[in-house]
Length: 148
Image 1: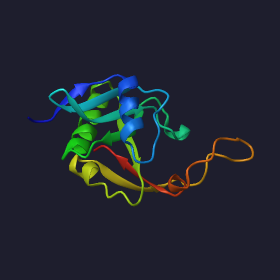
Image 2: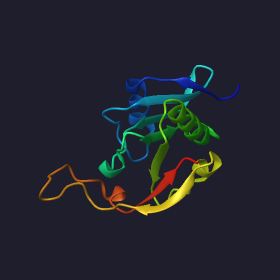
Image 3: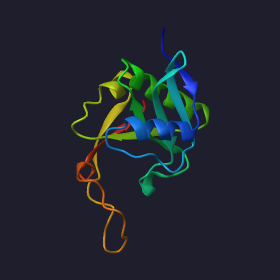
Image 4: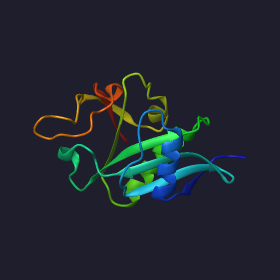
């Protein structure tokens, strides 16, 4: 049986992320979610929402906030490609995502995305804006990718 893109709602996508994502928790909201399935079995999900970085939240940019699979071959690339097609169909001009430096980005390159460079780093918890501490794994710089 082959993989196909299927719809999924945010609650179901978040439950999948809560079960399988290596280092991120579910998200509070999204513009849309998609899944890749093999028959009735969901093999991966992508949750697309507003950019986390407020300076990128210009109304024409979306961010893949979560991409999570069970390791099925080509599932990540299929999700990234489908997310960009859906974002374009909805009228958005840009779709971005971030990876950790130790994540190679093969799925993104396979889906035609471009590595823009390193961004960010640090902790959301600062004296002027107290937050729950960011996990140490996630405090370093990230790689910013953009759909081509």
